[in-house]
Length: 229
Image (cartoon, rainbow, N blue to C red):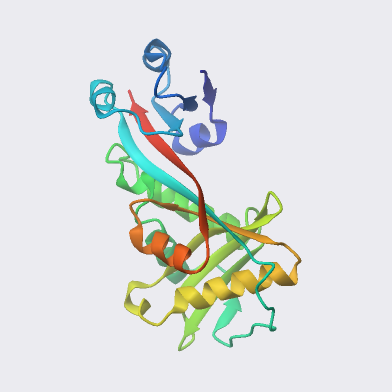
């Protein structure tokens, strides 16, 4: 068990942040408490008992669900939808949708973040996606020439990974999310990539049900705790 300094997070947020892979059966509490980190992300494959969480002031920030779908059996029919376009510019509308996509992000729900960390992080995420630094495509869904939904796609470990996805709350009864997902699956097929992956939160039951109903399977659950000093 060791602390790995997260240089990007440290530089971006302005205070020292580290990451620890832990086993809830054997935790080195001296290591976690006697250091100069302001924040530690603790990653565990199982839930830490509640008494230990309370004793050590841990905050359960996320139960991260990793899902995947094999797309090789999906019939590729030259999927086209005139409402779906590739986005190349960041505007306030897309930024607002990006914030909606992260409404259950651990950076949003942890009250110890007090310097607009969530907004800064997600603004940087979509900016880097739109400039292809961490995404291959940003796809939008238009209604009356207004972007009301979007998804980012990037190649990761020989799979197309859905990074950010959201549909404006005023348009969530129109199956726009399903159409964006259909685009992603067909895009993967067209590129001869057999797997599509996505990550969501266990707390986001709507998203979890959506992916499972569309053929995704759960691969792993990771419990992420925040330890502040």
